[in-house]
Length: 182
Image (cartoon, rainbow, N blue to C red; front, side, top):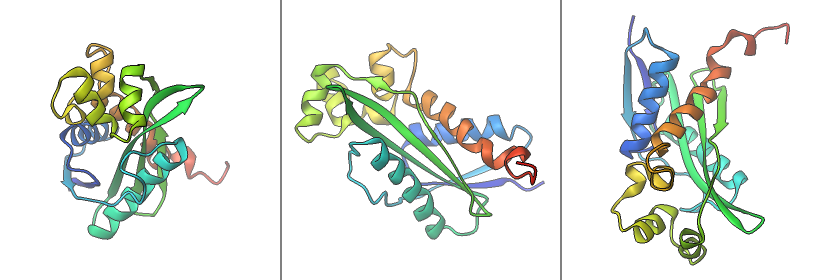
């Protein structure tokens, strides 16, 4: 059986590990070949709403397919923030497109951010840069991200992305979603 070819619309190591882990969970008997590509999100560098973040993930999956049309799956991952009742929350959307053109999507859990992180984001910094400044780290978005920093590693960016990717794949791999009786 040939390996699944999965095109990931990111070269971020944390995102690549999440995709590798999610596909290993959903397809344990299959070898997987991941290809990382740069893909345009079509949204702001720091999406500031649920809708914009979701659109960014979908756009990245579509752009990855345009870049590498011969694959089994194309994956877009987009991290975003949104203010809810004055609290800035961080989350991400996952979009996975299959060869038939179907798209599965899921959103991660939301993480309330402290005021010390919210202030630099409100001033225009991307969340990863704000985290690096507040926590005196370097390139945290390619590691555990805000989730890892704020939960002392109990949750990580990679872990919550993996979880959401497994869920995003469900409509693409579970036959109940393509059944005529639904």
